[in-house]
Amino acid sequence: MPLTRKDFKKIIALTENLDILEADNELVYLRLKAQTETGIDGGFYSDFFQWMTERDFSDFHRKFSETCLDFFKDDIFFENKIKPAVELKLAVKKREWGNAYKSAKRILSEQSFINSKLLSDAGKAFLFGSKDFEENAIFFRNLEKYYSKTDLFYIYFYTARLMDKNSQVQ
Image (tube, rainbow, N blue to C red; front, top):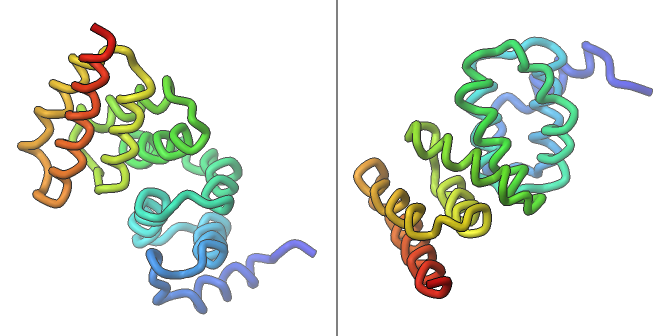
């Protein structure tokens, strides 16, 4: 029996103070799905972005991405800021490196909505999604002025990996 609007509202009420980073992925999925079914509130975007980008990618992330992303097709904020990050995560999970590289380049060029896990995924996309290792190493290195000290590890790590790959092909 499919869930009703009343069921979805109850799920939202019962998960009001849910810790998105610690809760079971299935529970977060149900909360977010309920919000798309009953109307999105102000906290949805933050919760959704945090869940999609800071947690390890699970089958529930994939399921939500494949079934619910069309819900946002007319939402300019979502399309421009959140969807590229979700596309990056999906492409990395599927090892679609060309698509991952395009998404990573777009996100990093805009320097918006990046956290450590996304930066790491972007580094992987740069390593495996393009053969322009030297250019990508320079691009990645130039990011250091935009990110926190916590994120510098990923910037230096992937810069070094890209430089190493460049030296191997020359």
